[in-house]
Structure formats: C-alpha cells, structure tokens
Amino acid sequence: MVVNCTEAFFEQQMDHFAPSPGTYQQRYFVSDEYYKPNGPMFFYLGNEADVTLYVNATGLIWENAQSFGALIVFAEHRYYGVSQLFPDDRLSNLQYLSTEQALMDYVTLIDSLKTTYSFEDTDAVIGFGGSYGGMLASWARMKYPHVWDGAIAGSAPIVSFEDMTPDVDPNFYAEGVTYDVTPAAGASEFCEANLRKAFAEEALVGLDAQKIRSALQLCDDDDTSDEDIGWSATFWLNEALSYMAMGNFPYPSTYILNGDGTLPAFPVRVACEFLAEDLTGDDKTDEWLAGLSNFAGVYYNYTSELSCNKLSSPVNPESEIVNTLWNYQYCSQIFQLFGQANDEKDMFWDAPWDGDASAQSCVESNGIYPDRSHFALSYGNKVDWARDASNIVWSQGEYDPWRGGGVQEDLNDSLIAVVIGEAAHHLDLFFSHEGDTDEVIAARQLEMKNVQKWIDEKRS
Image (tube, rainbow, N blue to C red; front, side):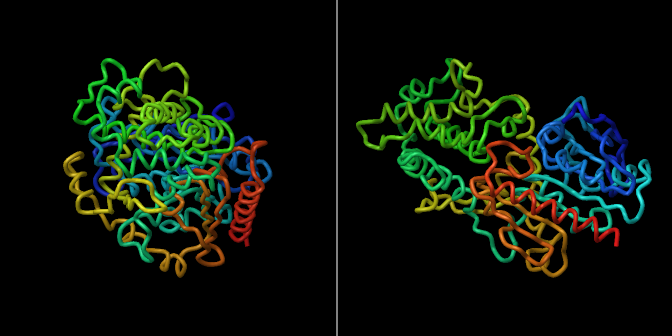
C-alpha cells in the first residue's frame, strides 16, 4: 500500500559488471512502521511492471510484517516504472536490461539499507516475488545466499527453459490454458469445444473477412488486411484467454491489467458463459462468432465502454510498454518453451516447440539471438538444486497456465513446493480476502512458517 510507504531513490550503476557509462536512479518503497531492531527485512524483488503494482497487491508482506517486526522494502526493476536508465527514450538502449543487472541492483540496495537501519549479521533478509519476480527471488537465494536467507516464490516458472533436466513438457502453457476452459476448472460444458474450433481447427482462417469484422465489432480504422484477419483474430482471442487464465482469481482483481482496470471473479468462467452452448455446427457460425467476441470482451472491454475493437491494440498503454520490454527480455535471456500439440489436453493448433525457429524470430524482431542455455548453465537444474540449494518455497496455482513450468514437488526438506487448488497466478501473495479458499489460506501459513524458520536459523 503506497500510502503506507516512503518513496525513495537509490543511485545505481548502469552496468555492474564492466566500466559503467553512468548511473541511474532506482526507485524503491520502504516502510519502517512495523520495524523493530533485529527484525527481518521483507524484500520484494520487483519484476516487469511499475513497482507500485506489487506494493499495492502483495498482502502477504503487509499482513505479516507487524508480527515479525519487519522492515518492508519493494524495489523496482530497472527499465520498468520510473527506474529508467534512459528516461527520454524508454524502449531503446536495452543492453543493460538483464536478470544479472537487476539482481545486483537489489544486492546493492540491500547492502545500503542494512547500513541505514543498523542491521546485524544475525538479522535476516527474506525475498518475496511473484511470476518473474518469483524467478528472481529463487535465483537470488541460489546465487547470493549470503544476502537472502530465504525466498517465497509464487508462480515462478524457473524450469521452463531448454536444457533443463528433468525435461519440462514444452506444451505446458497451452495445456494449462486449455484446462481452464474445461468443466474441471469450473467452465461451462461447451466452452472448450467452441474454442477448439477457433484454435485447433483454425476456423477463423479463411472465413469471410467482412463477417469477422462485423461479428468482432472491429473499428472502422482497424487496418488488419483481409488476408491476415483470420489469424489476427485468432491471436487476439488467444491473448485475451491467456491473460484471463493467469488472472483466474476467485474475486475481482486489477492485477492482470497492471492496476488499470478490473477483471471479474473467475474471468474465464465468466467469459465461457458466452460459449455455454454447442456452437460448433456450420449452421451456427454467426452465434459462434458473437460468442467469441463477447468472450474476448470480458478482457478487452473491461470498462464496458469500448464501442469497437482493434485487433492490434493492447488492452491499455502501460501493458504495451511492458510487453515491448518483456519481448526483449524473452529474446535476450528468458527464452521459455512454448509448444502446442493439438491433442486431448491441448486445444491449440499443432505447433511443436522449435527453438531454432523461435530464436530466428527473435533475430528478426529484436535483432538479438537468445542465450538459449543461460539459466541451465548459470543456476543448474532441479537435481542440482536438490543437492545444493535451500530455503525456498515455491507455490503454483491450479488454474495458472504457468504451473507446468514451475517446481511442483519438494526437492529437499527446505525446498518446498505447494500447488494451490482453485488458484491462479501467485494468488497466495495477495491480501487476504473473504473469497479465499482453505487451500490458499493454508499455503500462506506454510510460507510464513518457513519464513519464521529461516529467521530463527539466522539468529542461532
């Protein structure tokens, strides 16, 4: 909660690993309202958004800080929010945007804060992070165990890379999204079949362009060509579903929209109500198209104020900036597996993972070739972690399509995994809510029990 924090800035090197061309001002938020001498530091490792999103969403920290006497810190990731190395041109000069630079920012900031607050050697620092932030928290504990004494990593897909052993299923994300539109996840009976027609059967491709424009209520100035409109509409629908699957929370939330708008409770279920009947027959094309339009509208028209749609438009301006930066990070380092199989678990068109083709696409779109084995070579794999790492709790949500790219079983007695039923993307990090299930409540209790254990170990 930003109102309970002090906004501050810390001068960081632009480059921590070579002669730096300059410095930049990293933003962070700090609250010492609950801090007591010899209390821990609860440090949120900011990820790919304005850090105020995490300040306002991460209730797990706020609700437990007082009982732990903790200093609260939320650090913003370089290039996101206002932590800009090149403020006049946010989307150029991205060569200093890397996980290593971000982690060293956090190491340096923690060192300064320890001095400011007179931390002793027995005072613990606990990392928190969700999604990419959870990946950073995991890597931080592995690489800098002298800085972070433990990490709570929500929905962190840290095994979703090439060269990870044991191998991860490259189709995990498509299978996770498919699961969310089935009755097993609370969706209507025919939702999957109607979407499978759009995706696996590619039914929008080749359909009359004017029929698509009319049914999807495209704006007059939408410049998608008739030749491309089938696939463009398919990708537009897929993006809406993907984000709603990540944000398939049991109560209304602003999180997936980067704080700029609200999705309803269980948005995938809400959207699937527009596809509740069997509309797969050729004689029901008009009703099917209308259902798809309304389905996607739950995401794109979250304000209920849009009069028309554009297939190429982001859901909001901040999300567009985040997507551009994330695409660079994907193509430089975070080169995750994305395949599709068109089978009983996967309703998408057949597109097996092809690392060479995806790498070439990065060259064409961003002018860079991915470091494809970076994380496996830098941090090892689950076998290595089970032997060498400690003090991490990984959580996964049943409805989160990223679940299959994360750790879902305990690796040793201090590397703990919990899968939370009826939860989506790091729901456990959010504030408590009357709609919380017993499972998410239990997960939070498990996480904080481990936090206490790590603090006690540091003091002993």
